[in-house]
Image 1: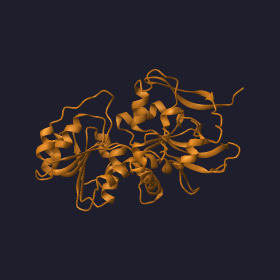
Image 2: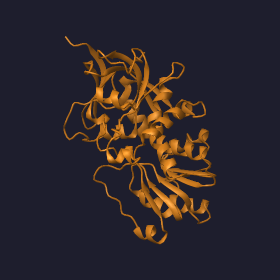
Image 3: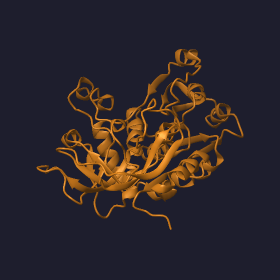
Image 4: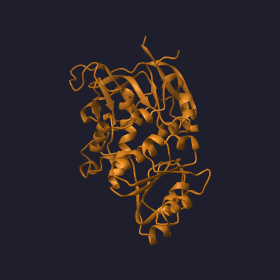
Length: 352
């Protein structure tokens, strides 16, 4: 009889069940990780709430994974039993044209987390391909696995501010005060932005921004976001504006608040099939640079991991809730409501 583990299994849109399932077998040339911490991401919530797999269920999501090596296939020497690792969810091939051109975040032969069961479980397996390509990093014993799990959401935001070159003296507006927006704000200040403005329609999220050096907070439920940000910048607009939420409305708003010659960033993914009405004359007549951001290159993944482990990165302020995996549905609702900023789940943490 197969040994069993606890897992949060998706059986359909909005149907996530905490149940016992077989522990994954160790792939030839691969290894099995015992999950210590796994972050709950906005994309996880979107995937769990919609028909993200077109009827292909049951399935286990979860991609912000840190854990200890539990089993290693014979002959494998790239990892050691008991070693704690952070696993980036996508392993770039580093051979395709995009990878060789410095765009490994657009790898055409990526080993993606959506192709195999994920980390909302006690154990997760990784293949020989993953081991060969890397995209996994040793976590020192002195580092809390919860902190290390933040390396994944940090990676894309790290890449974004680097790619658009947020720099000394910039004014940056971020529409969205979730974990992504918070990371963008933190990193913008680290890179020397003189003013960071964060807007959201959720007052609970805005109330949590105190520790992160945000200069101006705009509550979109109480005022017009565009008018307020233009007022704060004396009608000039901001140097960089980032849409960091799943709304098409803010994609139009960033075009309106970006100064002439500035950069407007589409960061937050919107529901599949959604379209935005954009006033392209704003792009044309203001000579805007419009940038779509996704993921991080291999070197950016590494640098973000190193920053996540650095004490200067305020991990303790970002993680608002650490919960047992059994409470994943509660974690989803806490995040949706804005009561939680960032939830990290621990499969080994038992209720009571």
